[in-house]
Length: 349
View 1 (tube, rainbow, N blue to C red):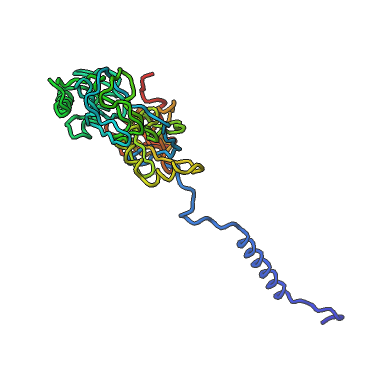
View 2: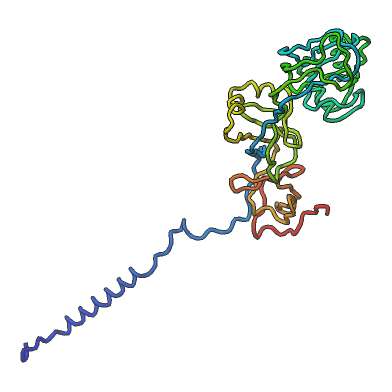
């Protein structure tokens, strides 16, 4: 102590300096950002991805409408005197039955999803042929629903004609000799073709009312994959045509018999009815990352794998992946990002 002033020894000053330097270094170490763990370091951009197979039915939820005309007339196709008849108010007419005989010629009731509108025979093709074949199958006659009127269909029609008592059955459809039904069974609300009456072609046999004739999609969704579809509504499934309608008699009869349908149609303020529509035969698609598809034009595009580029059709997406169709054997993996070097895949313009 000199003059009231404390004198610090050189050793003490040196120690203080070292402590200060040490503290500063520690603080600097604590303030410096830590290096990220090895597992969290930025990963390299992937250059390939595996290809997996997935079925795609293109399911859509749509609102549907029930087509129920106030009255529907069942028509007689040819003129003559009614010599026998099932026509009676409250009577049930079923597909495959002889509804009446006119000049002793059978008038056969037949329920088809497409009303018969022309004579049919060997070699004819079309939706009406397919509808006829389906109706024959429901009645127990062997007829493949391929839309072509071949020998098997002719044989089935000949059996139907024979069972109906038609003289000299020839296996061809004379459309005037068949009375179209909207479903497999109808109940007559009125009757015109009574016994002994002279009827003309196109005249009403009788009428039915509150008869479900079709279920139709209110608005078809855009971008649907082309192909035959089925509709599932109120727990009943049936084949849907290109116009978004289901008019198959078996489907209509089953649907009309459900309590859910009866509740909906009985209520004046029922909520809109929805249905699920899907491809009748799901597509076998390949599932790839969206980034794997390039040179996209509409539904067409390309994928690359190694030295090969493949033309593909984009059919849909699922959980962030693209679903594609590719002809031939698919590659095990597809290239991504910088690994894609092709500009096209040789697709014909």
